[in-house]
Image 1: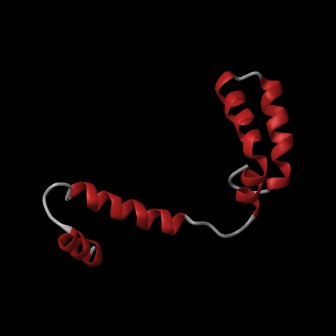
Image 2: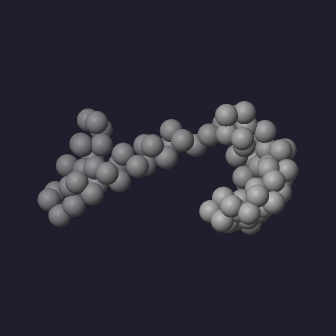
Length: 82
């Protein structure tokens, strides 16, 4: 499913997993039904927000490292230098 992203096959996959009765996988598949349109779009469109999420994660990591040690100016410099 993820190696060849075709969102149109997702409902068929969910039905197959539901029929398999595997507890962990069945629960995961049924939770996908809660927001089926978003999951289908995620498996269909070519663009991704992964690079933005990576940048935000990097900034949060730096902020956690500096917590209680310095002010905004040092945080700003650390973000710009890394």
